[in-house]
Length: 264
Ligand code: NAD
Image (cartoon, rainbow, N blue to C red; front, top):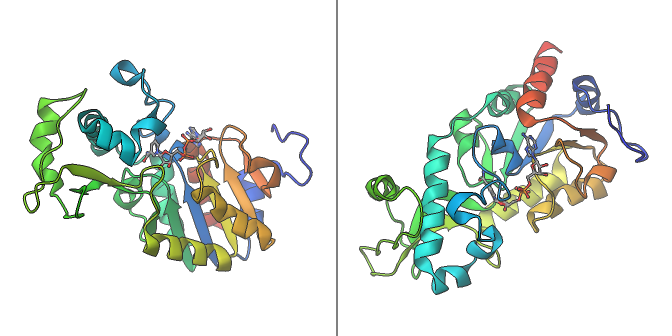
């Protein structure tokens, strides 16, 4: 098991993780784009293919980009929304949802905007970066029914798309995700930060731990001296400080962990 030279970094196995979680009643699972990779939803790095290869996703995911080039940004999000809707939650998603029966509280705090945790049946989910499905108008935030976009997404499978206009105020429609430079939804932040302040342990799954403020949620748990368990095939800035690093894919690790915990 590649545990590296980091002091205190335990070998990542279902047994080691189960031992670390022994006695934990309230658990928070923080997830990122890697959680959805095996469901076929591209991470930002993977998403730079085809027509989009020339564009830095971080530059498409800003309010300035939407003002400058709404067709390009809306087309990119329409494509991501289509991919997310076609995706099915993989076995790791379903296993994580099932862990809600093992603990008194299992809160999922996700940076993902694809809605897969809810579709997999996780009962308690905080979407820190909003949702691809929650379209709204850019000026006043009037909700815009996503089903009105299905026909558009079918007609224009890729490339720039002019955003529809809000039927209430006429401003362009935008995705209900949090762009770089925008604030996180207040209620989501309150819930996630409070849970990190009080949980017994935290799982961090499929995130590069580079995007702030989401990456500061595990820092709270580390500061409290509670265990943080990382599931990620690659090392991240969090890895040296995790109690356990499990270098595995979410779709392999979570079903193994669930089987171990349900058997306990
Ligand atoms: P990231 O793309 O920066 O990092 C993904 C991490 O997942 C990497 O560390 C990678 O090693 C790991 N990973 C890859 N495959 C994995 C697997 N099968 N199992 C476990 N781990 C795996 O993602 P991020 O940290 O979430 O930050 C990117 C930002 O982009 C976030 O703000 C997020 O909202 C957004 N985003 C969301 C989605 C989505 O909703 N599915 C997709 C792309 C980007």
